[in-house]
Each structure stands twice: as structure tokens, then as C-alpha cells.
Length: 247
Image (cartoon, rainbow, N blue to C red; front, side, top):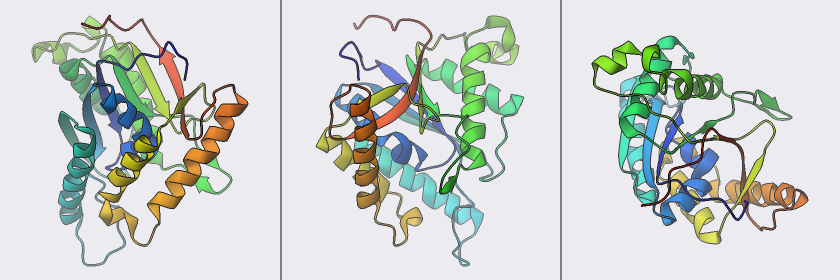
């Protein structure tokens, strides 16, 4: 990470499912939390399709996963949560979804927005969840033009929500990274603890081993790009304007 990097004063993370923020970006969120960033979460679905347990209903699972998300967020001191309640597995980047995300951007007024990369479709052994791509596409469209253009969302003006310019966007799990964020051991440990809060999703999965291995592998890529570190996460970072000076 460049030495000139300054953590945002306020950040809004927008992802598709409970556990996405922790799994994709828990290290960065930990760094921001340690630096005093005010954190806000917006989850577009309740993850109510994410189980093979025949005894669970979607409504019951949604309740479980909201509670797990709040327990995970508490590790980082998250200030607020917006659960938009869309159906897991059927998310689309509609105008309605863009407006809903823009509403949260205008409400929270973050310096930075964190989401994932809509360009990442698949890897050698993984097909990216379509909800992830839809969440990312809708979030970018919400940042600009709906959140920051006065006449683009008269509905939001009618609610008393004035336009807001986001300074930076961070996209996790990038198709082609432009930024490597070094992590301290405490950031990795807190990321693992936060993932463990999502117990309904873990089953017999060893979250600690996989997260550590991924952070070490990403650090190899970081070092190849001139960033010395032992642990890292990768992002695309878009700087739309210079963040406001610290108070």
C-alpha cells in the first residue's frame, strides 16, 4: 500500500451476502477500524438460500444470518447495518437496486465505498456468484450518477437526501488488482474471528487455514509488484476525488 494512503473517515461496505465483507475484505476493514474509520454495512440479500439443511426455511436462515453478520461486524465496531432483503441467488443490478444503494450512500455520506469487482466472472476452480457481480455493478452505478447527481434521483431528494460525492471506491476480489493492502497478523486474526461468526456457512470448512493461505499467496503477488509484506489483500482502487482533510 502506498505510504500516502490515508484511511477514510467514514466507509460504506456494500456486498451481496452476510459474510461477503468479512471473507473478501476483512483485512482492510480491520485496518480501517484500527485507524478509527467509522464503518457502515449494507447487505443486499439476507443470504436466505445459503444452506443445504432440509430443516431450515429461508425466513429462519435469514434471521440467523442477520444475527451472524451483526456479530461479525461487532468485531470491527460497525456503526450501522442496512439489510435490503433481496432474495439470495436472484439479485440483479436493476434501477431499483441502484436507487436503494444510492439511498444508503446519501444517508451515510461515506468518503470510501467498498464493494467487489463486477469484472471477475471465474477462476480456474471457481465461478463467481452472480449476486456478487450484480452487487458490484449496481454499487458502481449508484456511486455515479445516482448518488452524486442532483436530478438523477428526485425520489431521494423528496426524502431529504442530498447528493453526495464518494471520494474512493475499493473493489475486492479483483479481476486485475491495482492495489495490495498489507495486513498485520492482528488484521488476519480478526478477519478469521469475523468469519467464524458466520457459523451457519462454515460447516466443516477450516476458515483459518484457507484465509491465511490466501493472504500469504496475495502477499507474493504484492511483493512482485513492489509492496513488501507477509500478508495482503488485493483490490482495484478508484480515486474519484481527493478525500476531505481530517478534522
